[in-house]
Length: 267
Image 1 (cartoon, helix red, strand yellow):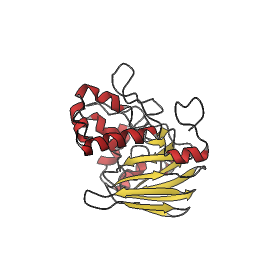
Image 2 (cartoon, one colour; image 1 turned 120 degrees about the vertical axis):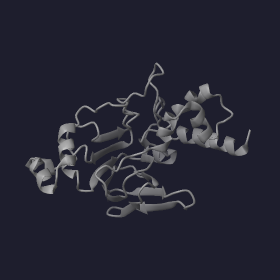
Image 3 (cartoon, rainbow, N blue to C red; image 1 turned 45 degrees about the horizontal axis):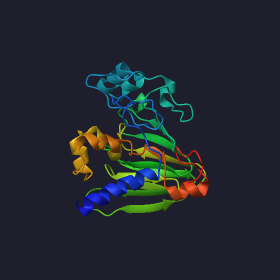
Image 4 (cartoon, rainbow, N blue to C red; image 1 turned 180 degrees about the vertical axis):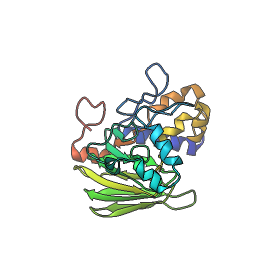
C-alpha cells in the first residue's frame, strides 16, 4: 500500500469524524434524497427535466427580449425587490444544513437580475458552521461579513498557494472566479455574511460531494483508494460532509455543541 494512498484515506476518515455527515444514497441504494436535511445540495437534474416553481416562460421572454426597455416592461414593480428573510418559494432559493442556511438571489430566483450580470446571497451560519469547499464556475465572489467572525481559505488553481484570512465584522473576502474556497464560523454565536457575484448565475460546485457522482472506480482512483474494490466505495460515500456542516471538533467542544449521533452529549 502506498504511503500517500494510506495518508489520503486516513485524512478522509479523520475529517468525516469531526463533522456531521450526510447519507448520499437513498436507503434502497437509489438516487440521492433531495429532501434530506443533511444533503442540502440540489440533486442532479435529469436530461430534459424541468424544475417546479421556476417561471421558465418569463425567463425565456426576458432572455430573448430585444432590449432592456422591453425586458423592463415584462416585470412588475415587486420583481425588483428580494426579501432574504421571507424569500420566494423557489427550489433554488435556499440551501440549508445543520450548520446554517444560504439564501440566494440569482437569475432563477429573481428574474429581474437577468441581463444585469450580478447576483447576491446571504449566509446565516450557525455556531461552528462550516460552508464546505466549493467553487463558483461563472463568477467572482465578494463576501462581506456583517455579524460575527469568519475564517476563509481559498486556492485559485493547481500551483498557487493557499490564501487564509480571519475576518471581523465589515471585512470583505475576495474569492476569484472558479477558486476552491470555504467559510467557517469559529465562534459560538451566529455569523452572517453577504455575498455578491458578477454573474446572474454564478453556479456552485462542491467537489467533495460531486466527486461521488462519478463512477465508483473513478471516484476511488481520484481519492487514492485504488486498493479498495469498486463495490466498496459506497462505504465512503456517507463520509462526505454536508455543504453547510457543523464541524471542526475543537469549536464544537468549546461551544458545547453535540455531534450528530452523540447520544451521551460528550464530544
